Image 1: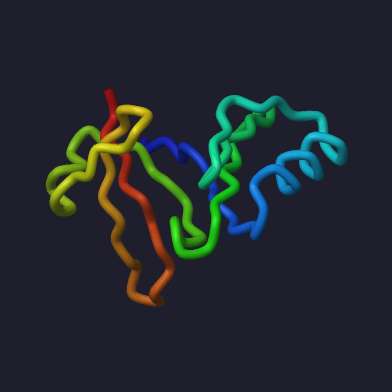
Image 2: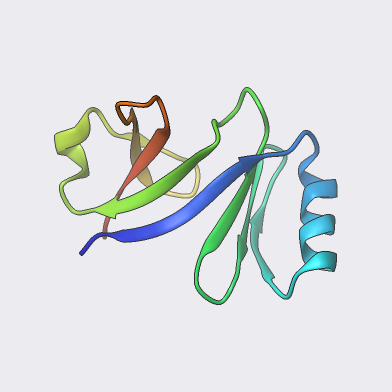
Length: 97
């Protein structure tokens, strides 16, 4: 069974987004820079992303991620490719380690 790695939502200000989620919910900050942040909850991770940098999406881990297209290596070392489902929802395919 595939693993849902995270869900990403766009926020105009990463710092304010992190502050709001951390103050509102019982969660932990895993990573933050000027273009995105990663927050973990008990059962899933939430990525806060800036419009124009990353789309709203959800990410699925797959060992065969290359089969979906050319992978891009990100600053954190992950390799991913973005695809769309038939209804234009964005899905990030994340290469499983």
